[in-house]
Image (cartoon, helix red, strand yellow):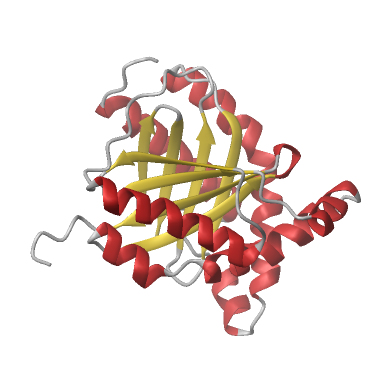
Length: 235
């Protein structure tokens, strides 16, 4: 895995900011990049165009998400190519999600060729187990118990969970019949509701600022990405 420095992160941040501004008419105020095998995350803050704000005020949330998804899908290949050029990383399965209320977004991807580095959470083993259990229970409440759950602590404030084997039969049929966008728009809010945020925050001893979700439907994989506050040392 190549070594990445602040210049690499700055180049990626600038590129993503310009790309989104050119496509959406407004770019994020800030872009935070994290690269730690086997993931890259690109966290967007203060990103909401004027027209989107008007649509949200009129209750047209679904239309905003559909438009964003359509525009982002056109950019994914360009982003993958540019990440290879800037950071010498091969990204597979680039994903994205939005938190329109927080005016934030997340673009993240799997780095299959990178060596898997130890993911040390800093949590006692008993709390680590509780975290895994809560992720599994959230999946069970919304779909079914994952066949496999992996947790990656990219840094003190970014956590990625990868859940394999979560789709139920009706979801697989919808995917088979090309209703993937409709399924995604339905599952996004549902899966986020399934998370017991208060319980996770107690386990982590910190606030969860943003929660993002996405899926690789072809491989039956679902992701949660949590962005948290710094650890609370006074609780």
